[in-house]
Length: 120
Length: 120
DNA sequence: TTGACATATGCCGATATCGGCATATATTTA
DNA sequence: TAAATATATGCCGATATCGGCATATGTCAA
Image 1 (cartoon, rainbow over the protein chains, first blue to last red):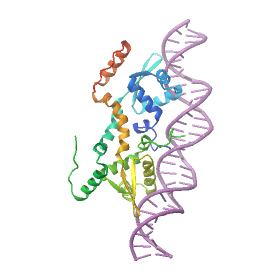
Image 2 (cartoon, rainbow over the protein chains, first blue to last red):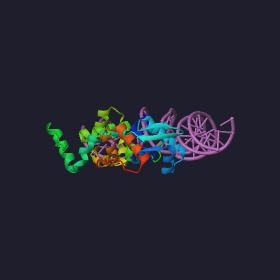
Image 3 (tube, chains in turn cyan, purple, green, blue):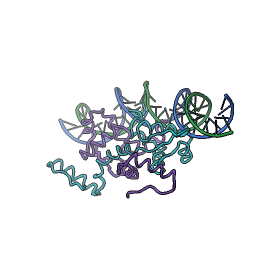
Image 4 (cartoon, each protein chain N blue to C red):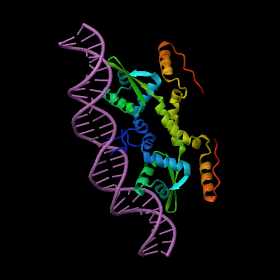
């Protein structure tokens, strides 16, 4: 067993650098052909096709056939999934009181139920 | 070869569900002992220790020894790394014109060189 | 010092994934 | 129809990682 549940989710999909490279590229260029991606990244075509396959499975990209080409585009909604996960922790690093804050939080929990100051 | 560069980076570290569970837990509780994490997640202790090891390697958590215990705390700065990566794409999903926008972008590219409308 | 407790580490088998190569499939052009 | 182009797929060996179990290491208490 390698990854517990295979690369069947967004987190695993973006764990691979070539895949992030493809995402970056699509984000910048918009809609691209497999050949264009191959040319841009300098990776072997089968490799690119496979990575696109993974990204497709998790919904990070969508394909549209156009003749003998395949037009790939990014589906940012799926990236939002990850962003949503991270957002929950954003407040932990935004106000950089770090140590001080960490300790404050703990003391807080230990004493009463006053909620931490939120900066929305 | 499994992952191209091993789990030596944050992206790989969070690809594993048990690891995200630990992160979630630490984010909520603040500072925790290995035993506390084991109890909270119901995972075998060696497993938790190993996952903590990975998180430690990539800097997502920090340890502090206290007697026979080990106090683990989250290091949100490293989560910020991921957030920074995602932020670059945020504009792609924030204004939800989705399909309409995607298609517009493509048509735009296909016709002339007018740059896509940016909402900064 | 001995034993209990907390945590880390080493070894194991199973397996998923990667990268590379060859090839199949589909589509356009001649 | 045949060649050429674009993309996907299948097979391969190598290997990293996971989960489980046993055990080593370190620390506190009696």
